[in-house]
Structures are given as structure tokens and as C-alpha cells.
Image (cartoon, rainbow, N blue to C red; front, side, top):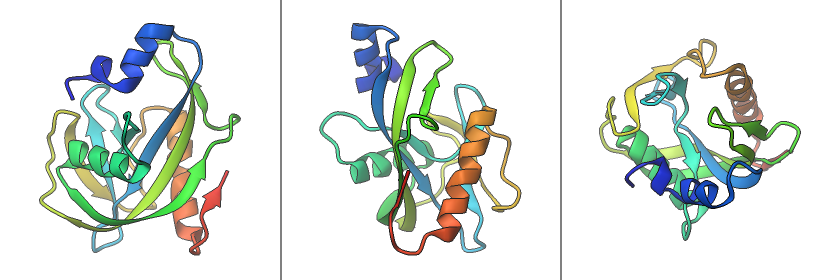
Length: 165
């Protein structure tokens, strides 16, 4: 994909402006053999985040998660488990820095198996590192810092039943 303006969301916002839209997105938790979580430093704002992004047309949520992880880390996902779906307008609505309002429906996956070599630099990231769950990197905003905390609390309490919020 060439860039955000060529993505489904970019084209949609070009057509409708900044009015609120519903966005399906994915987020992946990848742990190394020491139980540390993978974070990437995004090329745009140079802030740390988890592998994540919006679905494109004609793709499943699982395929979107695999694509986002591949684009941001170079890793190929073989198996993953859906652990949560976040959709509350109270916690899942925000206005992006360019003024577009989004109500995000997020599908959170625990990656159970992957292959490949971690690429620290991709078209979408400038670094990638594994962090202990009790010492996560600084997020791009307070909103995302709280969301990362929530995601890992849900990851820890996951008992096989999908968490719906």
C-alpha cells in the first residue's frame, strides 16, 4: 500500500470529510520466550505502539491482523487467538490529530505462533523491541497509554472466553 491516503480510510475521509466513522481495527500481542511484548516505534510520530491498524476492504479481521503485523514487523503470523473485542463508544471514540473522528471497533489477538525475522525498520516503523509487561514504553498519548494497560490486563485475565466491551 502506498500510504494512508490510498487506504480505505484515507479514501473514505477524502469523500466524507471529518465526520465520525466506524473503523474496524486489529491489535496484536506478540510475546517473546521471556514473556515480553513486542512494540514498534511508528515512523510517523516516532512513538511506541503495538502492532495494529485498520482493516482494508475485502479482508477478514484475521487477515488484517496478519497484514498489519507483516507490514510493521516483517513477521508472518501462523496462529492467533481472538481475546477481546472493544466497541464501547465511551472508550473507543477519538479524534485523530488531523481532525477525523473515529469510533473504533478493535479486535485484540494474542499471537500464538509466528515465523520470520523481526525487522526493526519497515515502511511503517523505525524500531521494534520487546518490553516487559510491567515496563511498557511511552505511548503516543495518554489515551493509548491507558489502552495498552487495558489490553494487557485483559490479556492476563483471558480464560478462553472472548472479552466483549
